[in-house]
Amino acid sequence: MMSERRPLILGNWKMNTLPEEGRLVARQMVPMIRDGLHLRVDWGLALPFTHLSALRAELEGWGMMGGQDCSAHLQGAYTGEISAAMLAAMHCTFSLVGHSERRTHHQETSATCGLKIDRLRDQGLMAVYCVGETLEDRQRGNFSKIITSQLMDALGSRIQSLDSNGLVIAYEPVWAIGTGLTASPEQANEVHAMIRYWVVQHGGAMLAEQIRILYGGSVNASNAKDLLGCSDVDGALVGGASLKARDFTDIVLSSVG
Image (tube, rainbow, N blue to C red; front, side):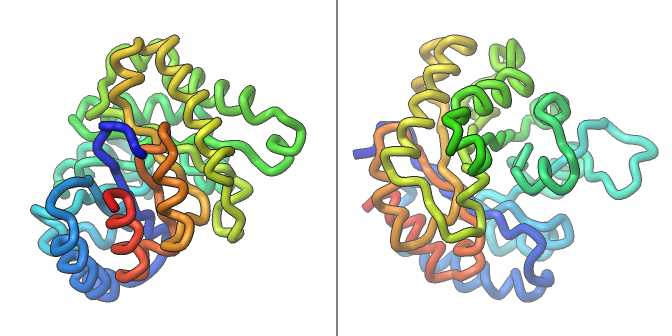
C-alpha cells in the first residue's frame, strides 16, 4: 500500500507532438482521468514551451501544467533560455530540473540544477528534481554514491528552505529511460528509501515524511501498479506512455486503485 502522501503522476512529453496534436491528446486524456479519479491523486504534464498556451485551457482545473526545464538565470542575454518567471506567466505550476537527458546532451551539472531550483522557488513553482545512475554505476554498485552526490550538489543546505509543495524528487535510473528496462519494485523502493533517508538527514524528519519521491524509467500501464504499490514510491514520472491518452490514464488511475 502507498503511504498517506498524495500520489503524483507526471507525464514528460519531451520534444514530441506539435501544439495542436498535443491539444487533441489532452482533450482525450482529461475526461478519462477526470471521470475515474474523484480527486484522489495529483497529475500533470511537463510540456514543450510551445504547447503551454494551447494546452492551458484543456488542463486548467484538472491537471497541472509544467515546463521540462528552466533557466538558472533570472533574465538577460541568454538566447533560447526560458526563465522561471516566464513559466509562471504561462500559468505553469512546476518544472522538471536535471532530467538525465539534460545532463547527458547539455552537460548540465547538479550545481546548475540547484540554481534552477532557486529560480523556481522564487516564483513559487514546484521543482521536480531528477536524479539517477547509469547502467555502469548500477553494475559497479556505485548508485548510492552517485545519487547522494546529485542530491548534495543541487540541494545541500538549500533543502532547508524548501517544503513538499516546492520540491519533488524523481528517481530515474538512466539505464531504464526509453530502453524498455525498468527497475524492479524492490530496486526502486530501495533507492527511494535511501533518498528519503538523505532528506531526513539534511531537511528533517517532517519534510522526509511529506516529500513525494517519484519513479521514472519506462513506466507503463503494465508495470505502474506494482511500482506504485511500494511504500516509498509516491508516484511516477512517465515518458513515452504519457503521449498515449489511454495508457497515461491507466497509469494515473492505477495510483489509487
